[in-house]
Image 1 (cartoon, rainbow, N blue to C red):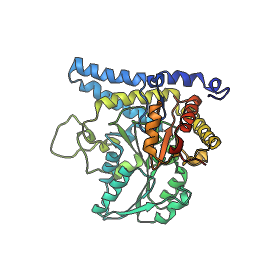
Image 2: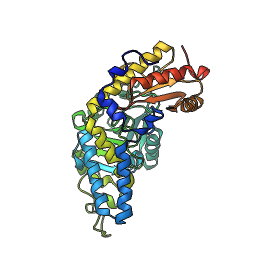
Image 3: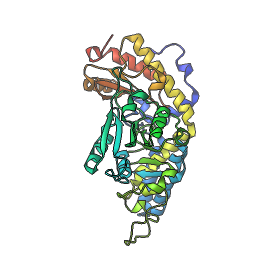
Image 4: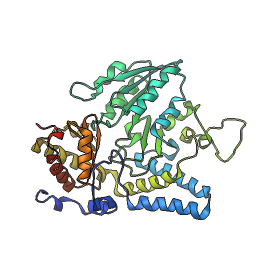
Length: 392
């Protein structure tokens, strides 16, 4: 049952946004942290790409234009300049290009990351040990939180990069970015933020925050396709960062086709490598434009209201959240304890609710298209799962 007054509390703008996603005609999509739902405008953009390919054969001028429009759209979304953005195939690839800028055996040899980082990123940082880097880790406390002071033991004059996940992929924990910016800069290190699990779900102004490097992908809360990620590198760093992993899209003029030298782009485009995934460029541009039309302030406020409501309802019904209760310490997802996460995900899918799982939890992630009715549908379904859910 839907609580009295819940339907009336849903803004008309949310309902109009929801109608753009046909999946809600038959299912409840609660897995945006795995893949954003497909919007009508994204499907149209994909069709536009296919039609351009079908009718024009090889319209690289149009495709390159969309690529630059995508750079500009993401820059605007995070408060950056277009010249500070590179379009990359994946977040780890983007950070790999960044890592190629450093000689780890010279100067500052240390990299630190938190244990809530996505594993793909940690593999990249561990691999830098083969090039002379000293790799350090920061673990959460007994309560499962990564407080700013937990990073203090890894902060010294040898640290070059402090890499943090803004939001943990496992439990939705959100770190205190302002405090980590201050700590990293106090020892002369760069703060590298993986915003993949948050970007598109709440406002973040990279200039105002003082973030040095940020990566994110469009596949989740930016409602795009796999194959597009971004690398933001603050403009003041460009003079000192020269990637040795490069390609033709990282050149000053990709159309030069000269082989005499590496003529890197004068801005963050130098962190690009090869031919971009053009279908994903079309899709992802449409997704970013869709959420930009709503505004991240409105999206973030709505998502925060839904996460708070779900935490309250889990408490009322005796289920056990694994996500911090403090709103300042959580992102757009709520993790819920299970005794058998894969079985729980499958049973929910059989009931028309799409969720994901990690670390013995089911994960529920919201966007502007979700409503309190979705939460009530989830609560009812959780009751039907019996011993698959941890209960108080």
